[in-house]
Length: 260
Image (cartoon, rainbow, N blue to C red; front, side, top):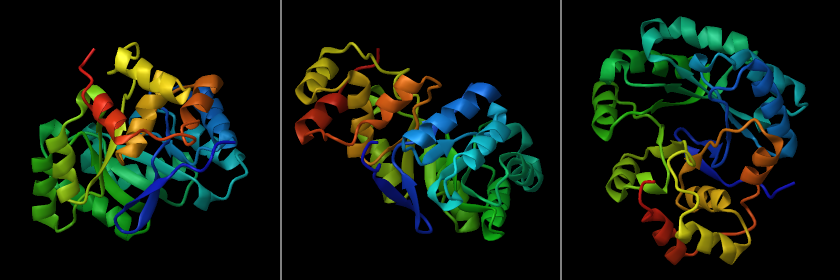
């Protein structure tokens, strides 16, 4: 088993593992097996969404893992087309997951590209009711996050966005840190040229693969990563990134990789 994955703290003091398993596009049977495999291997962070259609399978896998509920960080999301029914949606998500609460509930996309503070107020209410330990958004801009904060006094604790070395933007990272908003990235490999010579060089220096370098880059820069896979070997390899760390020079080189 790999060493424990490091965590980062979300407001209000909720620890989220910096590496988790994504379940996007995984049908029920594959999602169940992937989550069971991941939890058996040592993952403690599972990301799903109502829009993925696999919350029930994810919940069964969590229940069948034999792990205590408090050991597993579970994220689900509120789809933009159903934001006006947020109170009902969180209850339905919890019922499908078979959980009394989720560790993180996100607004999946800005509805009609708008921040919608009224929706955010309902998300806040769900947290206050104990249905979500932490709350956040996905695919929001810093300006939209500010709109939510200005209207409600509550800032999202995290923003889940597409993130890879090619997406690296120092100003965007700084904007989130100034707001005490954790960055969480999805699609780390889809947007990366895994055959880039820089990745090959860094991987060879540590005796790892380019994909492991990309994930370690996330961890070393404090960005949560949720690579998706339904294959045991890949799920295991993605977790095996705690035995090395990138140097500052290597981090800079990886951060400068161009888009494929």
